[in-house]
Amino acid sequence: MSNKHINHLERIKDAIDKAQLSEEEKSSAWKHIEEWYEEDRAFGMLYEKLSEISPKIEALLNELGLI
Image 1: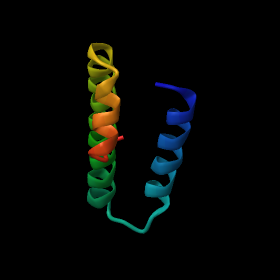
Image 2: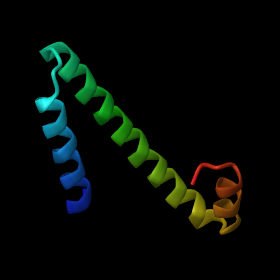
Image 3: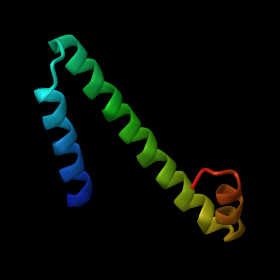
Image 4: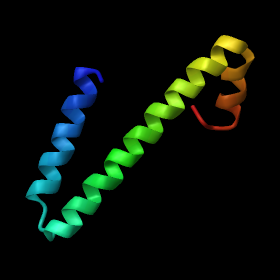
């Protein structure tokens, strides 16, 4: 994970910690963020592999609004 992403996650974590939420709500929020991060990372890996197959994939994903 890049330093940029680590910094963003740390800022989000700090904001959640400072928010006026119950511990359960904070835990749930952080869990969702971690899930979204993993999904985004998985999509990036999928995009990378598909791009290796054909450069036309990037245009198709762009047209679909996925990138």
